[in-house]
Image 1 (tube, rainbow, N blue to C red):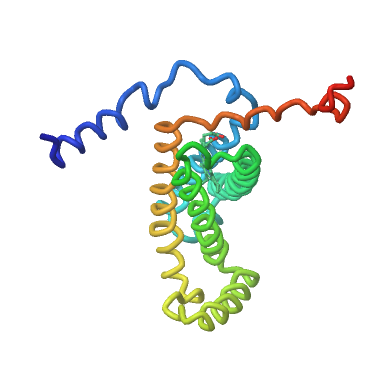
Image 2: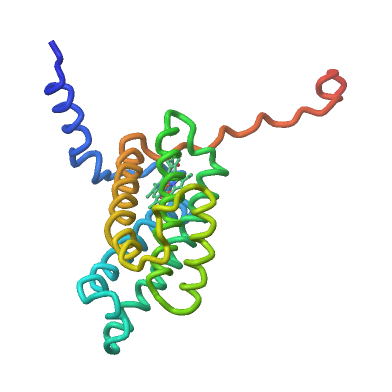
Length: 209
Ligand code: HEM
């Protein structure tokens, strides 16, 4: 009789199998550029994490130390531009192909949550810049959060924002993206909408044509 261990073992066997992660064939419709946008988002996310780790390893002000750290900071900055750019295009692709169909609702939901979590992740990164713009934004946004009853999120507290930006939010985002991509691998990419039936003229319908 199946029990939790057996069920978990079966699930792990599917999730961890080479067939799930290394498919050798792609459906014809999924070979265009539009279907690469999710992978481009994921690739930008990897660059984002790697450059972020280098910045965090060297400390909050390390972006200003030397030319190499300027380069790492610029890479982090451009990776986040690419991440949001590709994520928006991917969101449009999945919207216009109705990619929630065929039991892909949870994939869609996780994508939407990833988008929502990505916003504060980027915003806290902007706040820990510490320049006058980021201070002004922190104070304005703090008023907004206070009004919402979220006073414990202190946007003017650089330490809290640093912890949120380098640990809490990116790890949450990585977990959500990981689950999103796992579901895509398990459920595969959505097939296109069926072709609409050819239009029939009035004469044809009447039988006069
Ligand atoms: C963190 C950002 C995201 C990453 C890294 C990501 C990654 C991916 C990847 C690699 C695929 C496979 C197909 C493809 O590349 O087009 C995919 C599919 C999918 N994504 Fe995303 N995605 C993200 C955000 C979103 C958002 C914001 C939504 C919608 C609200 C979404 C909904 C979907 C759905 C429903 C599918 C499965 C069906 C299909 O591919 O046709 N994703 N995603």
